[in-house]
Image (cartoon, rainbow, N blue to C red):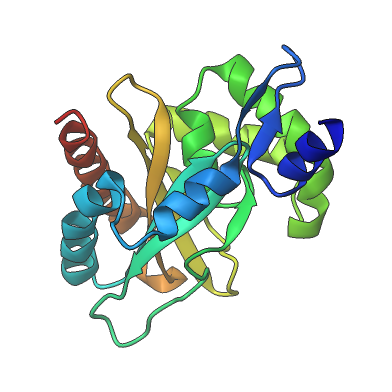
Length: 210
């Protein structure tokens, strides 16, 4: 029995909560669900807004979901501007905090919960050239502005903006992200794009109530 549980944890089917010592469904179950032929209600609700944003703003738009202490990219829509930034592949999973999407979702959590996740992910941050102090600072800024910004994206010379999407009970479950060459997201336009993403995230969240 213990061997089976160990295998399930390794495969991401089950996660062990360190505080309660209880077990819960793991991130891999959600990833398998998102990969199934019938798409999730979140993806269905979000895709029209992602398409509108990619068309109107012109840059590649991503949808990322939270899976435990990670962020998983589940879809992207290519924009209309001649130069597009494909900073992350669909299916890529990263620790919460190393991308603008992860920071946006952390900013949507109660501070103690976000802090605990950041500390738990701390030993994974080195591979992404960041650290808990930097992530905490980014989360604080995202709470104030309502969106997360990465002024130097994963791809050199790029910039990313993300906004959290909330479930019907107010929990952050996903994020919309725009990634563009840095010159296209100067300070004034950054705010405009941030507001556009906020409106889309709010609309998607309302659709999840239905």
